[in-house]
Image 1 (spheres, rainbow, N blue to C red):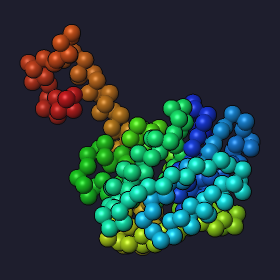
Image 2 (image 1 turned 90 degrees about the vertical axis):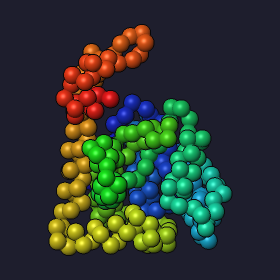
Image 3 (image 1 turned 45 degrees about the horizontal axis):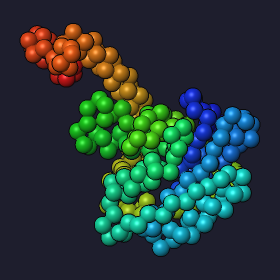
Image 4 (image 1 turned 135 degrees about the vertical axis):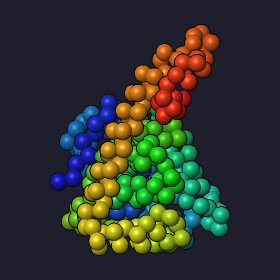
Length: 256
């Protein structure tokens, strides 16, 4: 059974409501939790990128859906050039909007799930990322100055679709999600299916590896703090070069 019981100290949350299947599920679960727990307060925020002919229609769908669940919703319209808007540009504009319209004590809820995590891992892998990059997404994170909570990160795509279909939810489908010229879409439609045909548990396996990388990253941070502390020269806030050179190369690099 899907659950989004909040595991962070804040009690005010904002669902990033794109209108897609995963955000529909997230909003529905959030509304149910708010009815059960008076301390859990949630509202929705829809960012209209204006990049598709149906963008305004999708915004209307989101507004109607939120109202039907008794959730307040705010819409923000961006002015992006559809000819020049890359994935990165659209994402940056979206998170800038989140930062502008979230209160300091509000946490952003996103509908990222296990398949998104696997895609992120592969993207980072092909960018030659180290342990920190391969850690992929965390359940709780800071991004562009926004606190993000991803309560569905361990949920499978099948779990989300089954829930959405059982609830009779109708979600919007962005045709750009099928365009394999975008790296994430290429992974989603052309790469992961090949892996899953050979290894059906690919997504679960990759998510486990990302989790191991998160643990390794924390251990490296702990070791770096241990090695850095005696290097620090206060109050100049400098480090001792001779002490740094006394460390093994990899530990010196990690301390830096």
